[in-house]
Length: 345
Picture 1 (tube, rainbow, N blue to C red):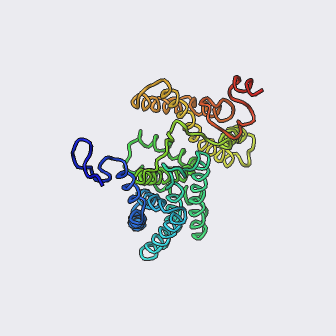
Picture 2: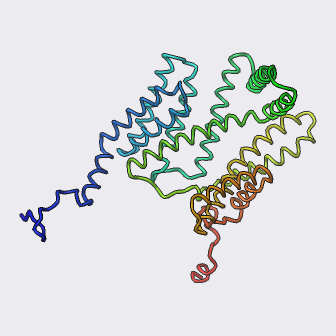
C-alpha cells in the first residue's frame, strides 16, 4: 500500500479531499441520530403548543421533516408522537385546546415535506389551507353550539365587546373609524380562520424547509412557480356572482352578500399569489436581482389593493394564458409550441 502521493507527501485521510467526507456527513445526518433529534424537536414543539401554536408548528414540522430521512413510516410515526404529546400536554393544562393543537399538528405534518422532493403541489397546498380553515371554523362552531349559541352570534358578540371597550377611550374621529372597522369585521370575520390557517401553514413551511436543508434534500422550487388550481378561479367567479346577486334576494341579502364577499376575498388571496408569481417570474427572466423582485411584490400588493389588477392577471393565467408555460395536466391536450407540433406531425 502506498502511503505517499506523487509529490512525496502523505495521502490525505478519507474525506479530507471533500469527496467521501461529504457523503459520510450526509449519511450521519440521515441516520438514526437525525430521527432522534427530530423526536426531541417534536416533543419541544408539543410542549409549546399551548404557548403559541404558530411557533410550535415550526418546531414540530422541523422534527417531522428530520424524521423523514428514515422513510415515510418514520414520518407517520413522528406525526403520531406529535399528536399524542400535544394531547397529553392539553390534558394536563387545558383539555379544551385539544382540537386546536391537533389541527396544528396536522398542519405541521402536511407542510413538513416543503423543501424536499416530497413537497406537495400548489394546488394541494391551497386545498389543505382551505380544509384547515374549515376545521378551525368547525371547532369553534361546535364550542359555540355547546354554549347554546351559534358561531356567527359568538363572533358578532366578540366584535361588539371589542368595539365597546375600544370606544370608551377613543376620540370622536377614532369612533367613526372604529365604526367602519366594526362593519367590516362583521362581514369578513370568516377570513380570520383563513388567516390563521395561512399563518400556521407558513410556519410549518419554515420548519419543513429548514429540515430539508438539514438533510440536504432541498428542491429548486421557488415562489415564481406557484400555480393555483382551477377551482380557485371558479370560487372567484362564484364570489363575484353572489356579491352582485345578493341585492336581488331581499330575504337572504345580507347572508348571500357575506358569503359572496368572503369567498371572493379568499379566492383573491390565491389569485394574487398567482399574479405576483407571474410578475416575479418575468423579473427573474429579465435578469433582475432579489431587490427588484422584492420591490415588484410590493408594487403588486398596492396594485391589488387599489385596482384588483394582480388577481385578475392571476385569474387569466390560471384559466387560459399560462404566461410562464408551466406544465399542467389540463394543458396536455394542446401543444404549447407550434414548431414542436409541426415536427411531430
